[in-house]
Length: 356
Image (cartoon, rainbow, N blue to C red; front, side, top):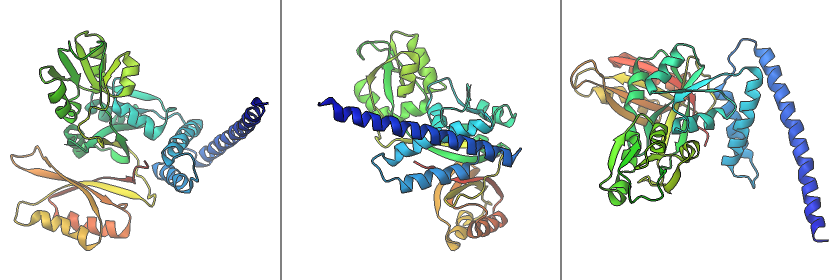
């Protein structure tokens, strides 16, 4: 008798699953119809996808958390998008990097990915048209801007189409059974910096070896019995490593922001950011004059970071993120005034704010 209520609940679950399957396929058919109507238009519409995910997370009645709803519908959108065209995306490799995790979070598991050996190669692959989009890290909440990505954004013809905010949890991975006999720790320089305090406390005498990516660190650790890697959980599974210590990042809120780069202009979603880079003229008060139009037009600035311009000693450019789309009236007016005052201005793109 005790099994009857359980059987009844399982029967209800089966019925719900069948209804979900029917609805999933109905949505896929609608996606196919959308593709037929659009014809040769682009398949990936960041503003539309962001609107869908934000709306669903806001109306979600529970008990599923909003994060789970966003994940489920990201995968559904990914599968439906594939009904129109199987676009491919490049990111920093090899398999198991945080860049790949960010790619999956934004585009879903259905999208084919091209793993590149460097950030430079991600840009080149997208610029050459070999893939539709790329995902590159741009800043970390602990260590600040990713210099190479910023340098390449300055010169690339590509635009920023989207952003991904990824909580980053670092782990000490190894083939070894314990930390006692470790001689080397491989990791990306940013990850080594993000775990500096933990390493100094627990493994102060172990050599730290910077490599091109955390996944490359995991690959090396898998071939070196005296070594460990600092990387994500995905790298541990991919390279057959044990987790000797988890969440060793110094800041528990450690987050990396990634940008999606491509060749399309993105329409306004209603909740957007605009990124641009500018250079001031060499005169007193120049930076104040450049930023003043933002305040006067009531445009909120969310990021301001300087970077050497590489055109002359002690000359800098400034990377800026602001709220709003470049086609919004207030943003457009502020940017027009900045363009008149700046020695150089390049709009990197307008794109939807990342949906968590």
